[in-house]
Image (tube, rainbow, N blue to C red):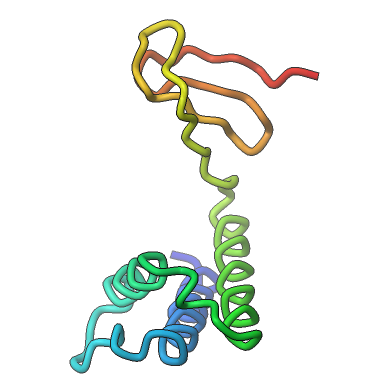
Length: 119
């Protein structure tokens, strides 16, 4: 694994921990937890009640730092923004598995049908 990626992973954990310590102090476990597990637990705790986790301007600043860390991690991993799930069913297989990528293309995770972004 690249050193820059490991250093950024530590930065991500620290950014989420800082926000959690202020917004949801009860979410921090008292015992040591592996960094990946800690990141997962804190992200789930923050996302469970996002309005409560962003009550002040300081919380918003911390949330922005977490977002920047996330987008930088995507760049380091050479990955684009995860696709968004669409509520409509696929016209080909009739399952609710349609996803829209950041570039606007739509694909079905079930039958692999694909529609390019329009104009």
